[in-house]
Image (cartoon, rainbow, N blue to C red; front, side, top):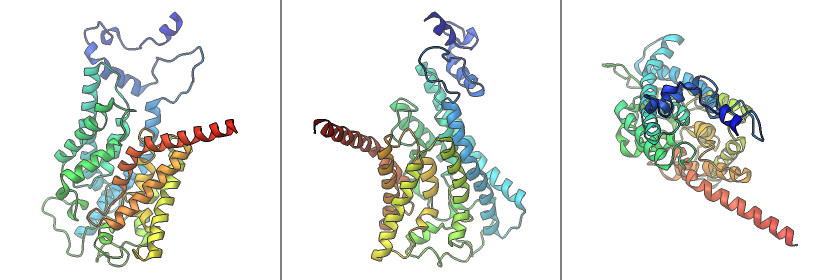
Length: 388
């Protein structure tokens, strides 16, 4: 026992340990110490699972997987600006225009969110959780580029406090914090996050060309158009444009190609469940195909996979290991429901063109019930076999 205690002894200076003058900064200093290097509090003997990957390292993989979508999103912000204003610029200037427009969103997201998490950790004298490494990166990617920073700050604070900390922090929340921030923005400030103006970044005094609608493909579909040929003079909504991501939309949600690169990383490393991704796609195609057969819409079923935030939500949001179903069978059911509900909302609720956010949040609440039903069914089936 003495050896184990020695092995688990903290590597922080004594001044930050209990009894030290700066103990009140223990959680903060420990967070930075363990972020930069592997913690010294490991067990070398006994029946323990030994793995070099801890929670911080696991979450960093998710951040790496998000980088392609973030980089493309920054370029697309500049590209949409050039189209809307008639400007011409090369690849690098276009990217950096978007970079400087998106950077404040990341700064606000991390500063506000981490400040609240640090405060809760210090007050409760607990170690700082690492969950916000991903949430802080996700939030700027799922909002329009013109989101007012003060509104984003309020949304982040709401999501961290009421979506995570009141339930005990990372691992105890039942709703995805990033999506909760997006839901708060949408329902609390709809005028700032809907319409066409919020998707195109402009400089002060710039005039958008008359031909530039700024609307997304989902907006055209919600207006009763087919979403294919009636997209306005500037923005095409053909399948390739939506797959590549050269359309208006939230910063990181437009390019399916970039999102698929992230999906490959998550599946290859085993961080995310491919079952949830596949079943979500199956659910969307099933409902979309049924609507085509019954004549409910002219939009091809596969268009739902490349419009709006479906791909991004399926890969990065639905697979959140904390809020998703845990059982293997439950993952199939959970993913299928998300895809199906997303398309149902899009088809039958014109007032809310994007259904992915609501679908995932609803299924977050159903995930424990799904797992309970799967486990109960398995137990009952085994009991009947045993008694047969």
